[in-house]
Image (cartoon, rainbow, N blue to C red; front, side, top):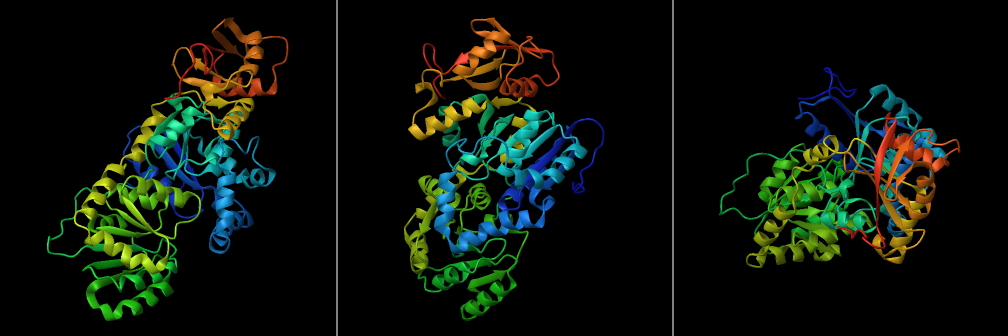
Length: 486
């Protein structure tokens, strides 16, 4: 059932706000998949999807959106450097920058108008904004951060959230090793649209079908890919999807005209899920959403010209799983595809690997995890953020860190969920004000005449959520009885 863009309300129940950012199509596609999953839940009575860049100024939108792809096209090494430089967890600490804050004012107003009970972020920009609103007491909603690539990138980590959803188990283990509590992290996969229920059956006599994708905007790289397939020795058919690039479609139609019915050339099409089910091999970039859709369809990939940073890491994971091969030069694309098709059993093995890797229910799992999860947020103090960053740079796990900078988890005694991650050095001040026993605290407003530190006030405001007090248990990550990351 479709819902109007401004959301709707039928009565009580969950009001889910999904925040994305239109840098490429993947983040918005993930947001649309979560919205689709909302429509299947009786407890969700209102839903809204908001692209925060569309709500911001045109200049801000162009710098972040169009500017990124200008860099990808002209100075890809700079994109890779930026990705690596911002990868360590909590490298960027503190509040969001003034320019972003100014452009976020319309987004904050939209959030207040909608009055969400749950917020899902499919881009790190709104995730950072929502964390600041949670810590300042502006919102009182469950919040989720949903990573849209297979490799987790440090910009997605925020100082406050209810649930963090990553694409694969290795990312969950990595974050747990840094000290993030396992009860707040889940490896669900990347949310994708519902897949066709029926498998497409093709005759055994039909040659393999290639699905060549130029992306939603239609990359000119597709011309080189198609040209190389014209030299292949193996029998095949190909469907070429040119996205919204009309000129590209015309060029490719002229290029393949002599090949007759071996090629089918399309523009932008909503039928990609059906095409993926029918195809035998996908040729294109390993964007997080494209790759996830291929894996859910059991469709292995031939990776071409991945964007430095996230797409290269996506490709590394897919090749590690046996579900993809990569072409590093345009001149070998046809030969590479031929190698896959001509080796007995290789294509079927890659298809089986893709099927094992796929997570078609990720969107529903994200909603289940958020709406059925902890009611109080996890707050990571800034001192704890510094410890996590230092651990990552030293390449040690949190349980190896000792002394004042070691980490301590505060556990909600009643719910059993982790509500804060702080440094051991900070724990002394908390125990003076809220100490109930050697291994417990009772957090409350205005606990003592002495004015609490600002960081303590942020923590108390975020986790109490209107309650007068909260008994918590102290759990140390190092020393005797240390917690070993899962």
